Length: 84
Image (cartoon, rainbow, N blue to C red; front, side):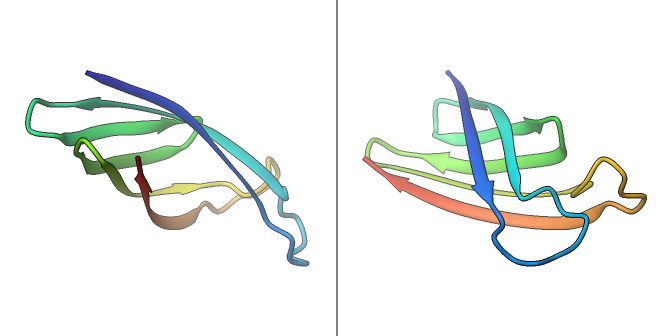
């Protein structure tokens, strides 16, 4: 089974040179045991997790440029859970 979705976030702090609105597209596969593996488009991220009938848990690591003029990518880790 395939998993496809989008995620958006907004940073409201005062960090200069940071694009405050960010969005990505997540593409992943879910195997028969519920393990999720995939990637986030437009960024260099790997995503892993599990899916059950009532829950989806994802975690990932990677890097990205917070602004098109940025020269050094930031390292990022994330995780989230969604309940049915």
